[in-house]
Picture 1 (cartoon, rainbow, N blue to C red):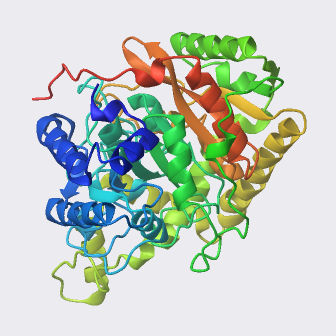
Picture 2: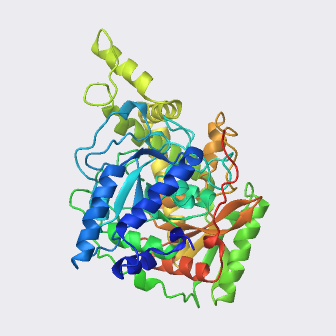
Picture 3: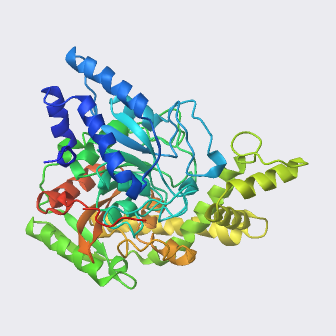
Length: 489
């Protein structure tokens, strides 16, 4: 059995019993990175010297019987839109190619306090704008199941690194599905927490009312451990919730008898691949066998979610990215006057997708169009949230596919932004409503993983994790590993 097949708790126990050292785990991680990274390209920067130094310190602490954090000694990767002191934080953009972080994001501080080992920063779509990882300003990332296919995005590097066994877990960010969709495409577990449960302080902003940090892991239990470490109120984040953090690990009872599941007819309708639908219906039969009950429900405003999301997210991006002007930090173009500094710096620093969204957002916020577009989108967002609230009056969780299809081939949709945007149609409503959801592996279609999405009530991550864990305990899809036979030239 590979070390990578062990759960975080099993690894923790082996460290405590001295069967393994932190150095062993870090060696294993960098050895695997050296082996598969030329094919996967999940990382933008590695911090081997610092990671090995941290491993030596933790091993010393272990031998002296010191305290051991929840994630003690576990090698992990960070999506490159979270600042970590002394590392580059590029957001996979040429605009920030040389930006050095001078402090830690709160989630990064919590990971360090839990004594995990950060091995490197992971690739992503530039400024988290994209669903395939083809929009990185440096290079695409490839799906470990077949390197001719995308890993999803924007947290494609975070998902691919876990699927390929390069790290034991990673952190990603989810604005419209950017943790769950790549988790689905790469056959791993991806959890988007309730908005405000995990601090956004130190997460480079894309759309501030939608962004949320969450874990990508090999299994549900590991996701519960990582969430336990990073959740909690943060006075540095004005949107952070002042709520107690439950014991997520104790929620994993395996018991879903009597669980009420709502299955939206909109999530299994037109546009959903028949093989994906079949895998989801098979998963629901597993829940039936465990004593859960499910019924078809309706989320009638789902059809407006994509348009609503891209108006709101692009508007917020237009505002947030105004700070990248070539003056304060990042790329600065040579120019004769200040206006040309702005224009040339942004032209040279931003990729096409970022420019597209800035333009759309600026238009939606402009005089004469604000009411027609931005304000109307906010009203529809309220209707989408109310759809969920009505279903949750009668049901404990909502289930459906994470994405309407499995991963698509690299280059297949890069020139068709609208089709690319529609890949997020089943994940976007969750962000608009600010509620939690998880994607777990539930089968395969044409050799590529399929994800089951489980959506919960606000701050009810415990039920979401319990439902996901029960399914996992009665199936073996989460144990499947990519062979990485395909090699990208």
